[in-house]
Image: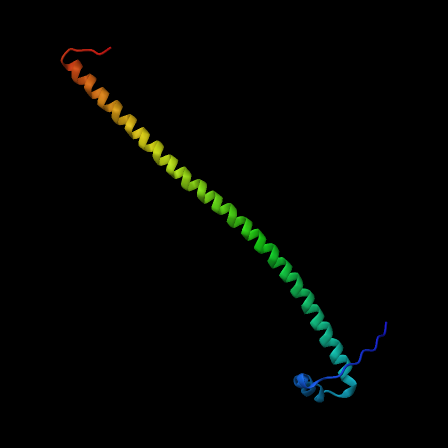
Amino acid sequence: MSLKITFRLTDEDAELVSLFKNVRSSGRSEMIRQMLKFAYRKAVEEDKINKQLERLEQVLSDINGRLLDVEKKLSEGVVVSQVQSQQEQEMKRQTSVRESAEALLQSFGMDLD
């Protein structure tokens, strides 16, 4: 397939003018073709990378949300665990006091049972 495209460089394209002045006129078309192919491939590649980054950002956001949920559950679990531990200590203390009182009464020959 053959397609002829022409364009003019403007004053804003001084870098390109300088570049093309150093290339033989017979090689300019090939140089422009190669530059366009390169730019197109880079644009396609950049688009793929941007899409992958968006997916990664979404995955990281999901993971972060899950991590916050786990952190919240763990901190609530620690509070529950501390409350249970305090309750267990209180029950042990009460049992110890009761057993001490029973032992004292038994030493005087009194039995609560």
